[in-house]
Image 1 (cartoon, rainbow, N blue to C red):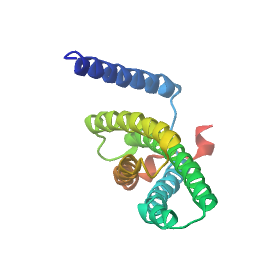
Image 2 (image 1 turned 180 degrees about the horizontal axis):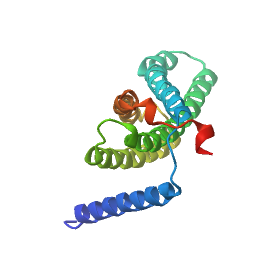
Image 3 (image 1 turned 120 degrees about the horizontal axis):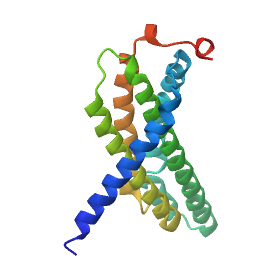
Image 4 (image 1 turned 120 degrees about the vertical axis):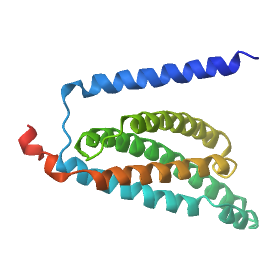
Length: 186
């Protein structure tokens, strides 16, 4: 039992190392950040913020309490089934969006006035934790539903908002004059 924290730390370091190696191999093709990438980055960033706020409201316990007070079991069953599907889709979508935002964030890092490698490493580590916990949340939602996993869903919402605020800073710090257009890269 005393060795468990060391094993978990080793697995985490190994996962982080694999992530960094994959990232280096993927970017070996000299992928360039373009103005189009920056525009799409902004759109996805706004979408993550809006969706997190909407999901906070949709998955609040208030609706579940209201439905519990109703007498029709079919209505309750349909309500819980639909919220479960919605929560699963949202977590998967949020994982993909945060992954895209991190990838683009790292591409745009070279086009800022002050690149921060230590910060980007820390951000990648936080992303790995987010990815792991959100995968666990997917399993929990699938097993018991979103309302019994509300604390963990709150973590996902807060993490999405955290990443959005960090990525928003990078988005505003990018110097457009250093970005190429899609046509000039091809």
